Length: 394
Ligand code: NAD
Ligand code: MG
Picture (tube, rainbow, N blue to C red):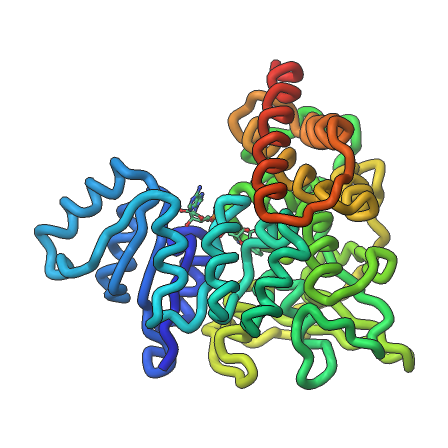
């Protein structure tokens, strides 16, 4: 029996994780759940899963949540609030596995805390890894933690790696990774129309049902940029060894090309419960609740090279990793601010890469040796990109 802590339980990944947990009550017990402010959903989750402790980051919402619990038969659940409490629950002794499913940089500190004490990390929160790179991987190596990718592409790559493979290690016989991308909703839209894209259009992803931020990232293809950096880190490969392939059907979730010419692909229906169940059962397998892939429904599979003119965010991610040092931290922070400004209709869709590029130009790629440097860079990049977004605001 393993104890699990779900950071970001009320999000898209959190909900899918609890769906998988509910199918395996003999193998997983929920110890801790965290939410930013969605206390209604958190309450339902508590009724079903009976965690020992929950974190509601927002203090007022945490008070409302406590009041809600008082008149219920789950009044014994401990309620904490504030960002520091996320770290506290991620390292509890009863916790074996931590699902890192908070969106953005807010997930870094609790995920890193869990890695440092050797918890099994189920990593959905790619931003945490991209912004902290080597520091995160060192925490994992030093503690001997298992780091298992939840991002569907990275989970696919992990599954295509040689037997006994562990993340962070360079697999010598693997010469290339083919990182697939759906291309998002605007793959075929005339480029001049992209300036008028609305948040509602951008979050309507053709194949995956996800949180708003990652949906916008998929539409700009920054998601693939972040994933390319994530792949370099998780699989210890150079950016040149990672080829982004647009595959609009999202049946293949990524591939590994070996020195003998073998290409291994992982396929399945586009449902995050597949990678979640894989990582939770690893190195075994168990049921995820996902329908079997009907191969006859897959009429065809197409593959295209991405167009960097259409998707400047992908180019910026390649530039950030080539520059190295703090630049991926800057890229990530500026993207979070730009996406937020777009979702709040302050800037246009096409302003997103402009904000990121201008922010990157304000920084030199100095070394990212310590957590303090990373956190400071993250804050500085947010201040600068907010100013740039304000200048572009319409
Ligand atoms: P979401 O927006 O649906 O959920 C985010 C969760 O994080 C919520 O539980 C929310 O309460 C919590 N949260 C938000 N801001 C917070 C803060 N400041 N402090 C503490 N908690 C906070 O997002 P999602 O789609 O579930 O994505 C979560 C992560 O997983 C992201 O990093 C995303 O890139 C990654 N991911 C998601 C998918 C997917 O299919 N949704 C696929 C691959 C990777
Ligand atoms: Mg992905």
